[in-house]
Length: 319
Image (cartoon, rainbow, N blue to C red; front, side, top):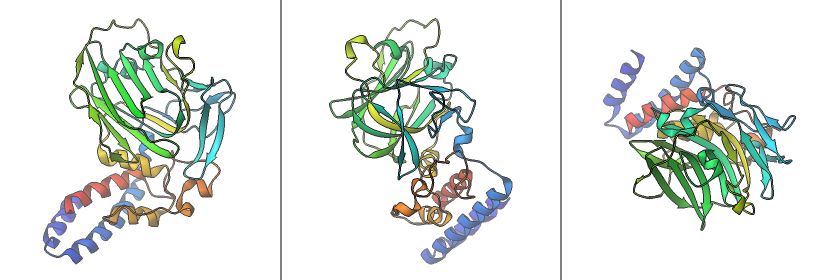
């Protein structure tokens, strides 16, 4: 009922640019207030798996969704960032992270992802080849599974089922923090987003393959080579806020997942939603500048992420 009234108001106001701008501001504030009262939670609360990587205790990093631990191998260190708080740093020599998702059919066998999947994380790439391997890609260059690597100054993503392999490449972003998100479905293929925006990517034709069905799941590995012939190619990078959803997130949800990890101020959120150009974000407005730990699993200073989604969707209707 409320949505219908607001959309009708927006339609009537369309003839005046000034009125539309004012209406956008009112709607944003209204939707934030409504969603606050209804208690909607962070978009990361809906993730099937989520590792903030803000604490290392007994060589583990706690998954805030279902308590699946991630094992920090060979002494990887925690470092604080000015952007969003703590992150795990892998040294490129022997550090890696093991995520024992042995029963997660969706990533061990992507064909089981009936609604596709989305994976997101913050990345500070320095060197090495291997970022993330899942499924049979953990032990070689054949699937099924997921493989995210770096080659010839390109991000390379391969996703395989028993019958097909999808592959894309995109320009490498190195030595700066970037929010990486990629989603896949058997119909749409792979789509890569950096800092909340779709990027230019090279799509390779879907390739027919014949891979054997694995007898058991092999989980995920971060930074570790998948062959003894590549032991010099451990990933040297920082990583934080790793999450997986067993569905394709919308473009709006991906942008929300990006901004939720860094914004700490309601005023800045309003500016983000109501400014046509992408607003600049000062160091003082970043979560990492004010806290020693990141809190993406909580709200943006009392602003819920679902209010962001609802507001952005409504604004798209007005534009």
